Length: 310
Image 1: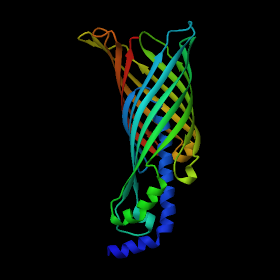
Image 2: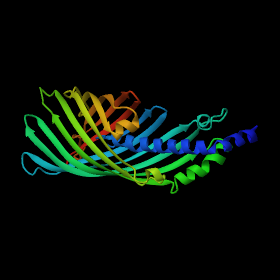
Image 3: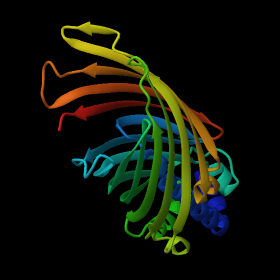
Image 4: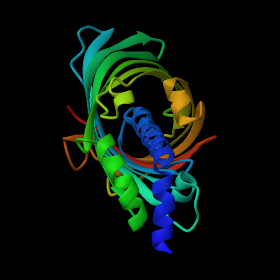
């Protein structure tokens, strides 16, 4: 039975090779572009996200440091992040080869991302603040494939090895960033509204010939609104506060086309913990939980933020 099945697979190898390579390209493109969303997080975070059949686990460690004000209107800042993501995509071999009885294989990507940038922070008055910046994002992607049947390993392993000659690929993304924020204070209740815009230009050295000069140009826009409460209780000289927010995100350009959705929303809850009584290094830290949902994406995220006293 296995010999008969293997012969059928070998007869369909030409068609399967084209479809398999197209699948590899599509999954790789989704992996690169979905990272553009999550490297924009502003706190240490770890989350699980679903893109259709794809599952992505992401951990991101961002930072931002504001230099002393140049004058009362603006100061310079530097920002960056280090992140890791793991993505598994099921490969339906029965669909690829047009047969039945084969278990799914998995193409897997481990991605390491480094981001560094900086810009200007503007205090415009009337509780309005703005950020203008640029950054470079470097991603190193390791490519793996799990063969779950002798048939797929016999037929697909040469194709995969040829497509990913180096077993890893490097990408550079260039980001332009703008943020407009309104931060009033009403008797220690601090509502806020944020409007953000990110523009990304990505270049890849992907080894599949048709993606050897792979480039994308994309942008994201975010509208976020929320409120932080006054400290509602103090426990052992540690004040506790809370916050909540909702946001909407719009995707444009290649990001919209490749990921298959053009918008998504999120809601989040935060707890703020004051630490000044116990340390001079950190004013407070925060813990946040958020849910993401949209037509083509869903997930959850846990984040931790620190406000250092320097």
